[in-house]
Length: 410
Image 1: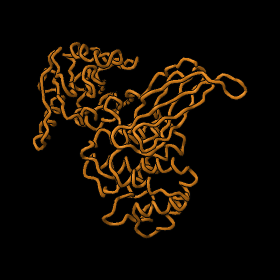
Image 2: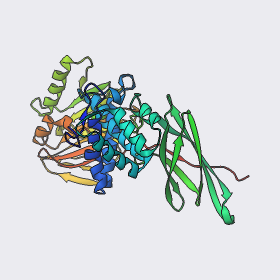
Image 3: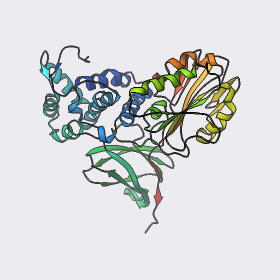
């Protein structure tokens, strides 16, 4: 499996770079090439979401140790993080040198095995830069940076020519082990928006200043997901895979028909966990008596629609309304006996956990969906008509945003 076919081989028993390069160039870069910006963003999102959901800090390992995929954790490290390494390398040395280095790598190692050291040597030579720090940090060491906005303030200043301007000071904090990296900021001003970058040193706190033509209102950290980093579960979009990866989870049976296709999901979960050490609790629905901890998966039949709606309202707000002939989501109505919806929201009262609901207008509407439910884990809601997907969307998680504090002019 290689983007360059069998032209360059992976060195046996060395770190597998092939899957990361293939994922980046075939799965990701194609969307950039055809200028499908939303889909390119979606690919970066899924790389970050996969790593943050399936790789716990205590089970993380270095990209250089990945050989082959056995589970979702391996996939997140060996495919997704590895792909992001090439994205970070491209940003570090620039497009021209990146593509030149890639062509040189292929021509130099055609019909020969190569490893991560080979890649480092080629790109260091082509860019005339010492990239030892880069490969040591991103390839040979486990983990990802935890970055957050700490303080954002501004004051009026005089620019060249006597014009009024604003000096913005941004303080960024890295928790745990600091990384060397450059991270973008979106600065929203009274009359415009600009993207700036701040280079972080190997220190817990980094500070940068920018002179701006208009008053800054707020600053958002890495809004386009251009940097590989650890995110909190609250920062991730709500989705079924958030429920799946929560160590404390409960299935809520909100249907009364024992022959409902929803029972297949309950049976599949309990059967699968006969060989697992972790267990999912299964309870019957009782209004105002949902579990106080962890994520919950509500399997909702039409007979308990109204009671489920009252529970959903607390976490989802007005995003979703369940009706007896259909449902409304994001202001759009879907009616008919063959309609079903799978949606997830962050639990309002349980930080880091989710409420996920599968609801069908009739039992038949969820018959096919019930067999393949866990294939639809990466979106906040998926709409089905007679078992076929008609729409899927992502509700963003909480961005790292701070309002700008204005200092008094001295």
